[in-house]
Length: 113
Image (cartoon, rainbow, N blue to C red; front, side):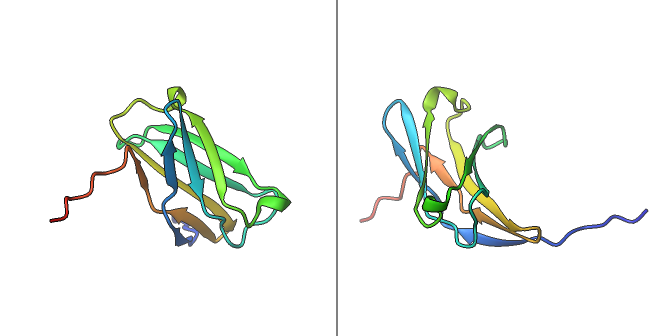
């Protein structure tokens, strides 16, 4: 039996903004165009080896065009020197949105001189 592959296209989204409150991480992401009430957006928190957790956010009518915010207790996150955080959502059976990766703690930027 031949292998069958379904074509999936990706539409890149910007990386989420990560805010550290000390005990929690607040992950803020812009609204995703084309989603409908009841659809889910998944936020991934993973180590560089891919181990981690996923948090699903179910969209409501009033929040479809608003930025999304997920608050996570830091004690529930995978133990790692650095976490890769991204989010995404299916738009149809053939398309998916997926964000760029945000890093926690954030990468150091080179000193400008």
